[in-house]
Length: 448
Image 1 (cartoon, rainbow, N blue to C red):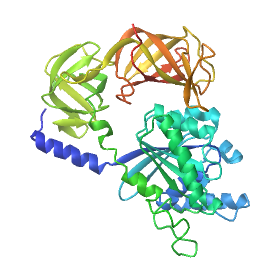
Image 2 (image 1 turned 90 degrees about the horizontal axis):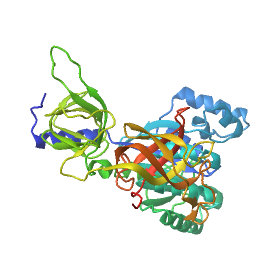
Image 3 (image 1 turned 180 degrees about the vertical axis):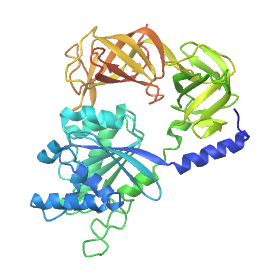
C-alpha cells in the first residue's frame, strides 16, 4: 500500500493540497454592543455569501422593527431570544469565502456570563477579530477576551476599532484606542496584534474600495492607508502554525478489517494534530514508549507518502506494537511528549456549578480519557490588573480563569500548551452528566 511518488514529489503534492484548501478558522469577539453581529453580517453581505431570500427576510424584519436601513446583524443573531434582546448569546458559526481564502467564522457572545462560549469559539481559531467601540475604548470585557485569546495562544489578532463614523473618523481617537489595545495585548502575551479603523454599519474599511449608497468611492477615514479588515485576514499566514511543529497524532482507533483481501491489515487511525509524517519514519507511541517504522499511510483519497497537520489518515507500522486509542504517536528521534499523571496549568471554568478540591472528574486529552481528582485553585486571573492574584477560595466559579492541578488515575501523554495548542489542551468533564466543566491548558510539571 505505497504510492509511486517519490518523497520530493509527495512534498510538492502536499504543499499544493495545503495551498488549495487555504482555510482560516476565525473567531469574532468583543464587548456587548460593539457591533460584532453587524460586522459578521457585513462580511457575509459584502462577500455575496447570503442568498437573495435571506436578504429579503432580514430586510422585512428590519422594516418591522421600524428601521429604514437593513440590519445586517440579523444574519447571525438567529436565535429568537437573541433577536428579542438584540444580543448574541450563543456561538453562531458562519461560512464565507473570497477568491483568495475560505473562512469558518465563529461569532461569540459579548456578555460576561457567556465568556465560556468565547473559549469554545477561540479554542480552534487560527486568528481572531476583536471589536472595540471607538467611543468606549478598551473595556474590562475586552481585556477578558484578550486574556482568553492569549491563554489559548491564538496566533493572530486583528482589532476592529468600530463605529469610527460616530466619532467623525477622528484619527486621534483611533490612535488613543490603539495605544490602549497595545498595552492590554502586551499584558497577556499577544504578539501579533493589528488595529484597523472600521464602521461595520456603513462598511468602510471592512472590505476594500467601499462605495457610498450613491455609488461613489467612500472617502471617510481616507487618512488610513492600511489594508481593509477583509484584506488583512485574507493575507494572514497560518501555513507554518501547525506544519513546522514536531509530529503528533492521537490514535483514534485501531483498524483491522480482517477481509480476504487484507488478512493482516492493522493500522492506527487518527488526525495528524501537528507536524509531518512520512513513510519510512520511525515513530513512538506514548505513553507505552513502543517504537516502529511507518510502512504505509492510507487516506480517504488513497495511499500517501507524506501526511501533514490536518490530514485524517491510517498509519501502518512494521511491528504490531501495543498501541491503540489514547496513545499519542510522535517521532522517535524528535521532541517527545511528556508522560504525566499530574497535570497543572491554566483553566477556564465553564460550568455554572463551581469546582471543589478532590472533586472527581474525567480528563480528556487528545483521544485519551482518564479519571482524576481536582486540586484547589492556586491563583485567579485579575481582569482589571491583567495579573495573577492569590486565590481567595479553593474552588473556581463560572468564567473564572485559574491555575489549578488535577491528579490522574493513570499517566497520559501530553505537551505543554505553550509548545502545542493541539496536544497541550485537555477537557475536564463531569463523570455523571458528561458536561464539560473546564478547558485546561497544560503548563510545566509541578515541582517534585
